[in-house]
Length: 234
Image 1 (spheres, rainbow, N blue to C red):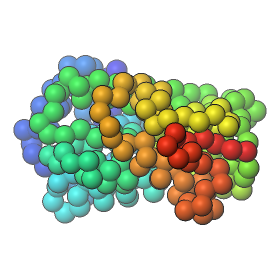
Image 2 (image 1 turned 120 degrees about the vertical axis):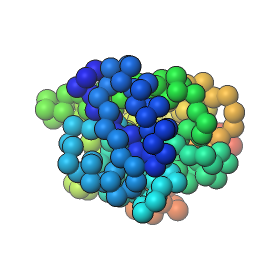
Image 3 (image 1 turned 90 degrees about the vertical axis):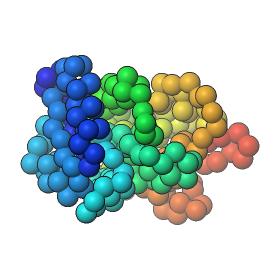
């Protein structure tokens, strides 16, 4: 895994070094940055970076704004770290485009497990991009969803989705008309059991609608079935 580079961004050097130790022990190559500006500069200069572990509370530019800027051009997996554990803080984190969110203090072994999960999802979704013209393509109204290329086009224009957003959309689009509850979506997309009520799926659905619907407040593709869950209609 030495060819997999991970960017660790935290203004607390001790935490950054702790995360680096665990990542290098697992065979990853680590680059560190200590504020938001350095993070963006490092990401621009190192195209081989495959995942970012991003602290929220940092000087110059905080992690939320950094995440927003990255999401304008990239769907690279982002795991946020924060001392804030409230549900609203998590919702804000996911709302900026984060793929996962962990609160401090965190279990380093759990962080490593989440790193592997995000990398696996990102790799699987981008496999076969060169040979994907007619394979695994779904058409839903004005959307064209290409599974192998991990690309979505709306009226011919590419829509930039995160790996999580793409998986949710593909899950629902490949089962048109079937209603999925939030727990089932979470378990199938995140590959984890749901142990507590949270708004993770709801936040990602909202962001997805903002990208694929003409009017997110009146969705025509990704619909809510009140009290049950979500479905995609043709």
